[in-house]
Length: 357
Image 1 (cartoon, rainbow, N blue to C red):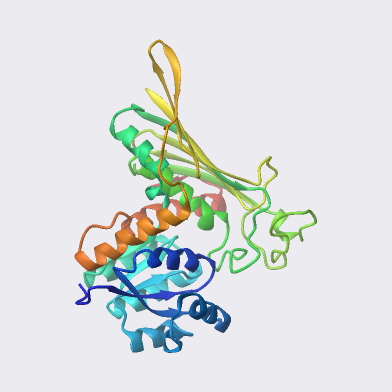
Image 2: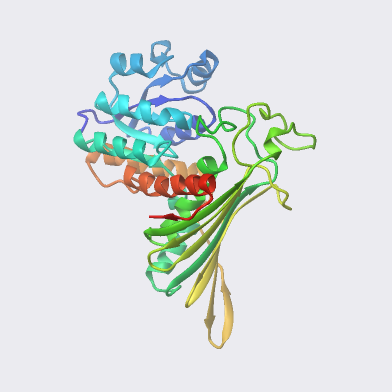
């Protein structure tokens, strides 16, 4: 554990997601000191300097130089997916705890190496999911633990965008870790399996659909100018996972899809005794037979369902674990558990066959 009262954190990657991390750290100022920021783009570093007051000597163009000169206690990785593994391994080698945005790696093999390296040095490695900290999710976990659902039977989950191909970064490139499966389905799969108690997968089938992303956008939408020339990721992916406890989970995710809404992010759960509907940013609905009637149950009050609170809580868990040695809610092993299923989805779609775990 560090000898300092506060955890000395370096933020590596100053793109869009780092803003929510910095806002979270601002609320944890009694526990955290931001000692460095790293980004290849000078304008991103200047924005961090101007917004958060970091001195010029805390700004770096590469993480190797920063690790050698600053020697932080911990590193928060807000990098493109393909850089998670090399940055994490370098940070761990330098003796740093690591917080890594999702997905933990590009594949399960990378995740396994990251976990082993962190364990060998007794360092904390956390993966960046946040829906565990949403009150709606906590309600459903409590319901499951109380036996409300009975035997879990099926879940149907969707994280769909109508025209939601990011027009920045590396999201258009399979080789750089882009596409809706690695980018957004990872969140849906995490929250579903969390609510269902992290069951072990048994077999999986998936299909990818391509084509729309290769064409320039010719309709009004919020992000029309994606890189259609180099686009090689799936427009739409569908998958079905059967778990060892008999639960069947059906998933669908898209950047480009002809649906009614601009974005759909939800799942519906069915059990032998009850069911539920989870919707991002909204209170859940629970369903059961009670008092001789079919009942729909909705919480009368929940705390904030917004992203800022979830980010603050997940970062607080990691910071506290680094400072005190307490348990992580989302250790690297959860990232590996999810990544094995993501790998299987990609392999099933590529080879057009069922994957047996």
